[in-house]
Image (tube, rainbow, N blue to C red; front, top):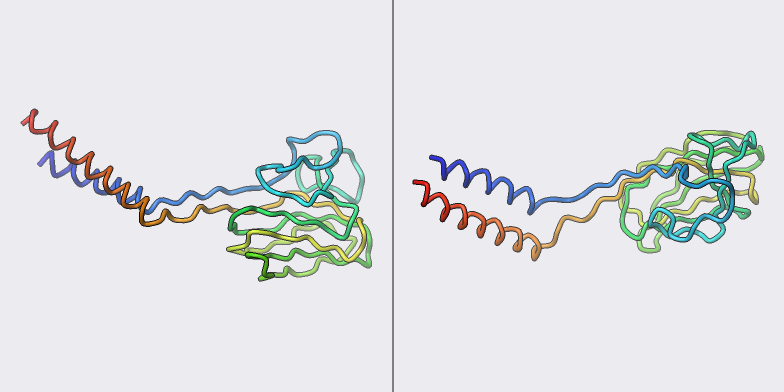
Length: 188
């Protein structure tokens, strides 16, 4: 009876390991930065357009969503390369130029697959999306500069392990079962 219970627990644990995938939720609020300057290369483990900058002083209406730090470019937007598939969920945007439009584009392997609703200039709001399978996003502004971004949201999901790693997990589970059965024979 005891061996059957142990066997069942190990079987359930090994099945869980074989199907395991890791999800990492991310909200980049940039609050670990202070002062102002170029966004550090590979910030938060991502690749960024070299034109992104940050600052932490008050400058209405370019208000951040949370904290005091936000990012901007002196261009018509900027890109973020996640280096893997993510579910991109959008960001906070604040702007001044009433004639401008701002939006996100989502890409997978270089092909544009999504475009968000356009936010009118002079607004401060979230651009909310739910784009699974993007590896690169591009923020577009129809006016040069005149925007800030904060609270960039995404979920990074590691792929389910391939069959070779599943086989290794199964072999480890069976080895553990053998070890348990040897030790339980001494107890019986």
